[in-house]
Image 1 (cartoon, rainbow, N blue to C red):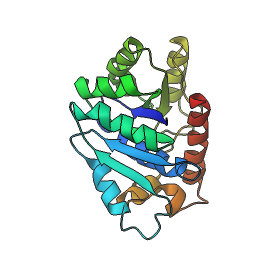
Image 2: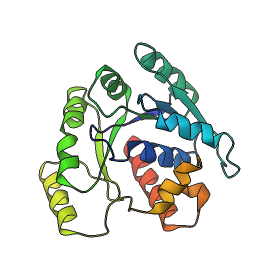
Image 3: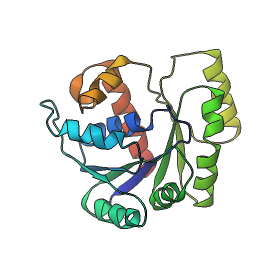
Image 4: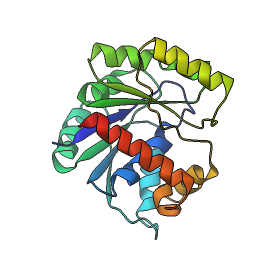
Length: 209
């Protein structure tokens, strides 16, 4: 059975869908990967459709879209056929979110390095704790260094919440690749953005072993 990663965060604009898509492509360099879109906005589904005709899409990624009572069955099917399954969850705490978190091996919470994003993560952190699931935070659109980022790093450390060392910076390459149905590792395989995503994927892989 494959490993399931729920990408979850209540706050809109934290970068859930972008993170799920970029990691899916990075993981697909060495593993079989599926993405499951349970966000009503269906942005990951649109990305997957773009990908189906993208000339630079070098890796196969299975894409599915479901919700409600079918969710658990779909996850079981995808996990049986793939090494890694990434779930793009809705930006709300609801039944589907709980189903996704309950089924996951890791709950990955993206946040911009700002207090509102950390505050918004509380519901997801609480749900993951209730379901006894492993959690990791990852900074997205992050400056290399700032007083605010250091303040949040200290607060997260004091609360003994895992924060991944690799952060994704605020780079146009991510949005540009996403708009073409690609990952940055395909659109610009030797760029700093590609290095960031590969480093993040490796760190997550270590958590799953």
